[in-house]
Length: 103
Ligand SMILES: [Zn+2]
Image 1 (cartoon, rainbow, N blue to C red):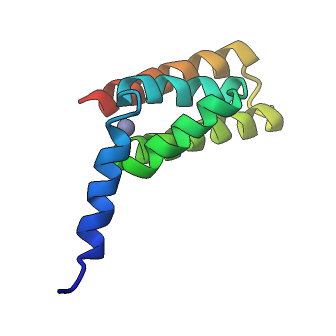
Image 2: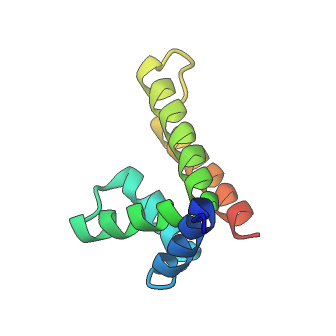
């Protein structure tokens, strides 16, 4: 009998996911992680969740992209916007992404 490795992997992921916090908590943690480094335990839980969850993986990519874009703009500083504008804009975008990832 051939072992269906793909099916087995998804079963394993589902099993691992059942021990982890829900997506809602993970996305909050991922947003926070941009501003402050999470503890080893939190990082471990997030890693495991990301292994099991394509939605949170996508969410993480999006917020990282936004965060990096804002940081780069902040360094360039050539358009003369205050830092508070960049921060507020980033927070709004992050909040939006968070909402869309919940749906
Ligand atoms: Zn998730």
